[in-house]
Image 1: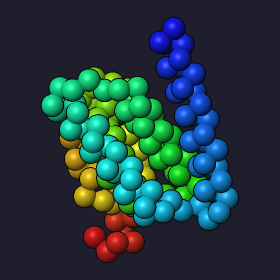
Image 2 (image 1 turned 30 degrees about the vertical axis):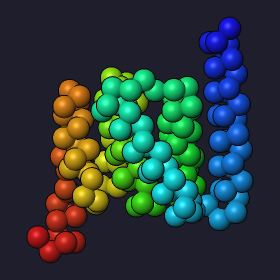
Image 3 (image 1 turned 30 degrees about the horizontal axis):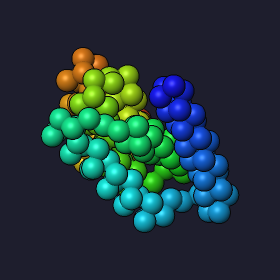
Image 4 (image 1 turned 45 degrees about the horizontal axis):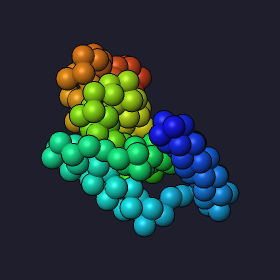
Length: 149
């Protein structure tokens, strides 16, 4: 019965998060600074629970899932460099929880969309720790000539 209730609760949360994200995308496509700060605070709280070996509650799981959905939905509308630290933090939470597939997804998002940020080398190192080999970007001769190399 608890599993059923948790499943219903998570489903409701996910649907409401998707609806909120859709309305935010219609309003301008950019996530507010307050929303970014709230997500960051929520991730930090979850990370503290993991490090202190405290059990995560269903609401913690819901927050983590909701944050990932919000980030992914925002990436559909427009990339914003303030999302890179959130993806990195969420990736770390997933890695600590041994949810490697989800962690890899977060780190790869950083490499694909925020390769010019300071978090790209950290994401590459985290992927290497997870056993994922990431090749350095190949620079073509034409690109070298354009840059004056």
